[in-house]
Length: 492
Image (cartoon, rainbow, N blue to C red; front, top):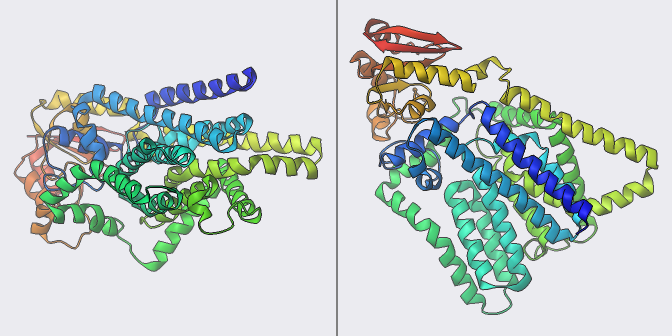
């Protein structure tokens, strides 16, 4: 490793870590960050996942970090720090993977630069939500597969299985990778094949046992929370809206210059892999590094087309594999560019692409740091601090509160109104009132009765309080605070 390239790599990693730390200290709260924080806190209070409170994801994240989510800003920063750690380790893994696959430090540094200066990566790796941890675990699983492929060592096989199972128990969508890795181990193992498959299955089982135990307590709750709710979370389920949602997200994605550049390079790289015969037959997918990288990319990309509505930030979940696929073709693309494009034009093109890539950071900074959109003002850290400080002035730490945003009670440590731990309003579910209560969900009847009885000391409304409990709210509570679409009502 030349000193110059080594210094470039170290500088890129240092910049990435510094940006992640600075970004997480000032960025707005993530869209679902309050949900993950509240769920982790609820587990810390010994509430059972699914049967004790409603939760829409696999159990690993809140279970593992529950002891760190007591409440308050200290826990908030600790959990965000874990996200930054996972994000930084992902960058290290990406560099190590590309270097191992290409044996070219310049290409590995270029791949790291694409990763380091991605606004989407920075944005998603600075909040306490499951995607950043899934991103890290998917890269760790792939890196251990590369190690196993090199020497077929049992330790690498077992570690790969442990990481893959942990990934699946974090986000169920990644179960699509299980057949890929099983097929690969069968194809690669030249000796003791049965023994190795059994060892892999045993490794997969270890992180899964706690999940199976949680599911066994109430399989109906688990199935409803993780699957049925996802089907009904979008009220408009027409084919037209489904197609419109996919089309809208695609347009929003390619309007981002750095994502458009990555998508274009990825498509070109896939074509080159096929034309060059690096992937010539189906078995190459599970035996060659380029094939496994492409397999990971395609499977994760496809599975994230199914959630409805689809969200643009899902691209982050497979961006690293897109960069890896690009990296294995980068030297060829560069050499062809040198053959076909004059030096001046080549230099101009590189400057333009680099400039567009870096300029793509500006919208992320505007949204995440400066909260330029009106709807994000309430998630701006100084405004969140003002609201939570006012909540503690108006009610004690032991008082029950009903907050339409679960983040506020997490930060104040106040008792949450039952059935509103993470979902705080009526949803269009195929349930009657008793069904909502059975699945630990609030509905209009429950909220109307709770506010009518003045069960919560405070009601923290985001935007306008729903009409179904507005009369009870006006009769039993006085408005004590209002700013940026957030209103606090105190019990009379």
